[in-house]
Structure formats: C-alpha cells, structure tokens
Image (cartoon, rainbow, N blue to C red; front, side, top):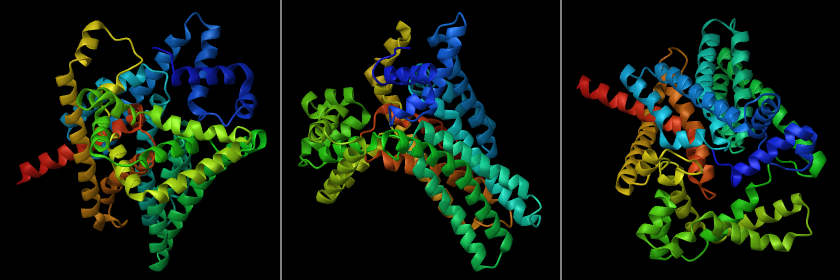
Length: 449
C-alpha cells in the first residue's frame, strides 16, 4: 500500500480526527466526505494501542469490506434468482477483479463504500417487500415498513458521507415512491399511498436530518452550507476545457482517453492526450481561482458555479458530446490505468503490463458492462406491467430498477466532471451483478426456445 497523492490527504484527515476530534475536522473545512477519514482514524487509534502497524490494520479493515461485498453480492444475486454457477462466477470475480484488488490495497474511499452500495440495493428490495406486505395485511406490518425505511435512509447517509454524489441518487430514488403514492391517492387505495408516504418520511428522518445537521455545522464553523467544497472548482475546470474548439484530433484523443491515458498516448500523441487529463482542467480552474484569493470559501464557490453555468450555456453541444464520452469511462473500469499505487509481485506486475492481453480484457469487460446495463433498462421497461402490489413478481423488476436508480445518477453526474478510473469502483459490483443477471436471462431464454 503506497500512501501518496489523494491517499496522503485521506491519512492526514484521519489523523486530524484521531488527534484533535470532529470540531477541528469541521472547522478546517469543508473537508472531504467524513466517513472514510473516520475509518482511518479508527485504524490509527488501534495502531497506537497495539503492536500492529497502521497499514496492516487498514488493509485488514479493507479486506473485510471486500469480503462483505462478496457476501452481500451473493445474497443479491440469489434474490434475483440467478443460476448458482453464474452466482459463483460473479462472486469470485468480485474477489479477483484487478480494479477491486487495487482498490482494496489503496488508501482511497472507494473500498469503504462497496458493501454499502450492495446493502442499499438489498434494502431497497426489502422496502418494496414491506410495502407489498403492508398493502396485503391491512397495515398490520407497519413496524417492519418503518424499520426498513429508516434503515434505507441510514444506508444512504453512509453512501453520501463517503461519496457526496449519492445525495442526488436519493432524490431520484424518491420518484418510484412518489409515483406509487400519487397512484394510490388517485385510485383511492389508502394502504398504497400511506405506505409510500411513510417510506418517504423515514428517508427524510434518517438521511436528510443528519446530513443537513452536518452541513449546518460547516455553515457555523466555516461559513459554507455544504458537505464538501470540491465540486464547483472541478466542475468549472472541466466545463471550461470542453468549451474549446473541437477538432478531429481532440475528439479522437478524448475517446482514446476513455480506455486510459497510456492507451491514448500510444495511439494518438502525448500532447493531445494531456489535454484530457485532470491537470488541464485543474489548470483552467486554478488560473481562475487566482482572481478570488480575497474571497471567502462560500463566495468562491458561488463564483465558480456561475462560471460553470455560463460555460454550459455557451457551448451546449460540446458539453453534451464530451459528457457522453466521460460516461463511457464508467464502463471501462478494468483499464490498466486503474492498476496503480500498489506494489505487486513481479509475475503479476508483468501480467498487467502485457498491453494486448490487458486491453482485450478491458474492452471485453466494458462491452459486457454496457450491454448488460442497456439490457437491464429494457428489462425494467418490458416488465413495467408488474409495477403493482397484487403479486410479488414486482420484486426482481424493482430490484433491478433500484440498481439502475443508483447507477444512473452516479454515472450521469460524474459525466460533468473528469472521471478518474477509480471513480467507477463503487459501482463495479453492480456491473458484475447486472452482467450475471443478463447472462442468466439470455441463457434461460435460449434453453426455453
């Protein structure tokens, strides 16, 4: 485990919590999302009281997260009635995926979120099941419904406190509950609208109250009502870069960069490819920041957001085009660029540096992930007739819908920014689950025909 770049920043934040507490952490902010630094602070405290090093303890903690992800993925795949062979294959792959192994061995927050992403999907399924029970037993299962709703909100809070972008996902997840509530009111089905409104209230209680309390703490101590303050700087820098004139070479290098920076430099040229690295977008934003040195953090944030909106309005075609290019990176998660900051055994390192083998694997996994994602969208659309609570055929359909409602906003919002390879890591297990689900349905249909 090499602690450099962002990893060093995470360790410093963990030390801040461990040594000086939460008030100091918040007052120096807005900082990064707090959950992963909190986990690091736990490892640091254990290291101080035992003979084990911090790295040993942290690696053990992160191995538990990876193992928990495998167990929860197994449970979710069984819920979706995927064949045992495909379940085993998917669970094994999650444990041996080059991208996920690298995540486990790096001091980045993506590893901490993996099991909670799967747990959130499972809990969504439990919520749908509770709504079904509530509508069938005349409301006698209200306690189970409320418990599942509160737990779902708590899981979303953990997701958001690890990756702030998930805050938007919960708003998207509200849509099915609101649709069913409105449908229940229109059809005068009291139990249907009542159960869905209860879930919405539960989510507001265990998600929005703690989240807004944390934001108010940031407002009190540093004048910014926000979870973090990194979004506006990165957003403007990336939108400003995309507003440059499009040439055939710049477009080709943008697409080549999807596979990885090394691939782009090998197939196009270094100068064209560097334009699509995070250095270029940070330079655009960094130059603009020089004009805001006398402003507060909150004022700087507002100025960057205003400039970002102007760039979006000025070159809408460029922004849509390059957002679609950036979206593809979320499916190229097994890129060799995702293998970094880890010292591997020589034989494994040599394997990773065989270009033809690794790029073939990268394109294969990207194709399977993109195909299964599109397949799942069509699956939900075709089975929309099951969006009722008279039978529980709805279970698989709404479970897949829950996965898509998590993945869709996550992918879409990242498309506005520069996507580092590791940004896709939180949804890799969901990609693998959708691939297994897709193969299961295709094989089942083939045998049936």
